[in-house]
Image (cartoon, rainbow, N blue to C red):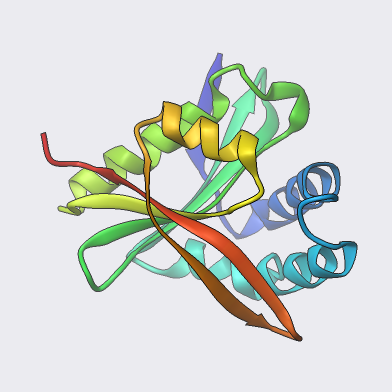
Length: 166
């Protein structure tokens, strides 16, 4: 059974370890090792993760299976009325078991309570397995974009959206 709970400052190390584990297994062949290292350093520093813990319009949650942390999700409300799902990573041995879907539904419920009209995310255009998983959870590709992230690196992403209007 999957349990989802808010992550606090004391959980940052767990999130960092999960991110490192997942990224180093999933992203080689999609992006370079140098870009993986850079993105982990930038996006998973203690300061970067604390913004999800400390902000009132953002959140960070951990998913556990049998009390073992196996996945996490981070989100932030945008000025445009969307909720942006910014990070969603599941340990490989738990893929296909509903953990990612449970985290997505957690963010969807949070977005509904916040009055958001949709949830959006970005996913690498070469990350076929994640694109398919998001499509199975009701997301659709809205546009493609190339986003400079510093140090000469570019994220070549799709922007995917799930409408919350019924």
